[in-house]
Image (cartoon, rainbow, N blue to C red; front, side, top):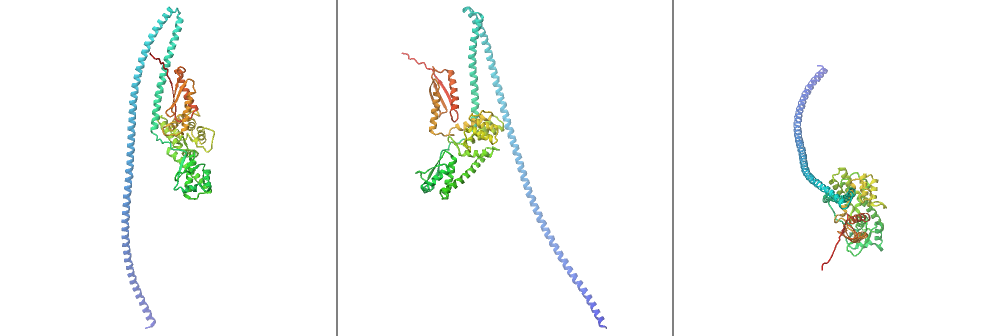
Amino acid sequence: MDPNILYIIIGVAALLLGLVAGKLIFAKNTRKKVEEAELQSQTILKEAELRADTIRKEKELEAKEKFVQMKSANDKEIFEKNKKINDSENRIRQKEQSVNQKENNLDKQIKENDAIKQNLNRQIELVNIKRTELEKHQEEHIRRLEKIANLSAEDAKTQLIESLKEEAQSKAVTLQQEIIEDAKQKAAKEARKIVIQTIQRTAAEQAIENTISVFNLESDEIKGQIIGREGRNIRAIESATGVDLIVDDTPEAILLSSFDPLRREVARLSLQRLVADGRIHPARIEEVVEKTKKQIDEQVMEIGERTVIELGIHGLHKELVRMVGRMRFRSSYGQNLLMHSRETANLCATMAAELGLNQNMVKLAKRGGLLHDIGKVPDEESELSHALLGAKLAEKYGENPAVVNAIGAHHEEMEMQFVISPIVQACDAISGARPGARREIMQQYIQRIKDLENLAMGYTGVEKAYAIQAGRELRVIVEADKVTDQESERLSFEMAQKIQTEMTFPGQIKVTVIREKRAVNVAR
């Protein structure tokens, strides 16, 4: 056989064998891949099932949590609604009680009016009876005059008219006095009620301010450092702060003396920093004092802001807020000015509410009470009184005209034009006149008592004058043969007016004029 043909046959056979073998291998690989794919798909299915279970459980947990949250929110909402319902029911019950009380008071008032009406009717009947009797007496008097005095009817009529005039005038004066006294008693009773309720609802503090502060030291050795070589350090401190430093034998203490509490506070904080630092020399002293002054300015603003927030006063100008803060470092007769202003503001709000004013006027009254003494803490000195200066400052920074008038009129230097003006004046007097509010130097107190007595002794007919009740009352004894009862009333009024216009005093002074006539004889 031809070798070429043999090669061809062998090649074809090899090719066929290769194809068969390749097919077998391909089939085997295919089966393997299919098996691997099945295994992979089973693994994927298992993982998917696990993941689905995990997701399902997570969703169930989320759903449970959400349900709990929604249930809690719903319970809270139901609780708040129930609370509001209960509050509304309580308010309704209170209003019902108030209405019932008002109805009872109205019934009581109606009964009282009926009793007054009956009393008036009885009085009218008595007046008619007396009028009838008077007419009879008049006719009899006319007949007597004509018979005895040989007078004409016209002359008798003239005399009768004059007599009746005098009698009517006397009765009218008596009735007028009774009406005035009754009105005064009712007004005084109602005023005392409002003032007492106002004072009882407001906290009070004792006077604690003075002119000396004590700076405590760890040891007496620091005194030498503060004094410095030849006293240069202490002179530098006094020059920078305006405060007198008293270094005496008092152990571990230095006294800071000044009538300005703000300066004393600057000096105290500066000394505290210098002692803590240990570097005490003139240059360092000036630096520390300047830093302390800036700190105090920030503190003043913070105090003012805190005060207006606590009192619920809004829209106050920043300069006025700063002045309110400066009040913390001012005092009047030992009473801290900020505490006095806060107390006056609360008193004004309470009194305005007790008087039945609307909410806006109550807020204005509180605002006027807080700002009524801002004229005592100006940045620059002024020739105006503190009331007028305060009114000017309030007007400058856009305050309500009612507040401006209340500030300027609280010492009657301006005419009172708004209803809150007398409220601010009264509350200022209450805050300053209560026991423990203010403290005076003994010499000033004694001098004021002497001036009060000397003022009374300057009037004609005054025999003796005594200031009692710590200067709250002036008792004047007049000579009975020189001063009549009517003149006694006039004298009391004139003294009160003169004290009010010429003297400065906290609170009020009661003037009592006593006239006594004694007739003494001895039986032997």
